[in-house]
Image (tube, rainbow, N blue to C red; front, side, top):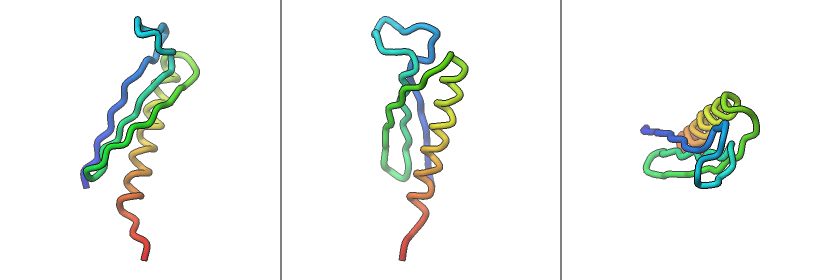
Length: 73
């Protein structure tokens, strides 16, 4: 099985010139030919936002793994 994960967003401490809020993160997961994207808005300082984004990204991979591997009879 092939999986990939990517994140992008604004962790702070300040917003960029786009005006998007600090804490806005997008998580993309590729799983067996299917791509899903999740939009998240985290609260906290830069380190906390980055930590929460990484945990959420890994959780999305975990969910996709079980979705693709569990077969119900």
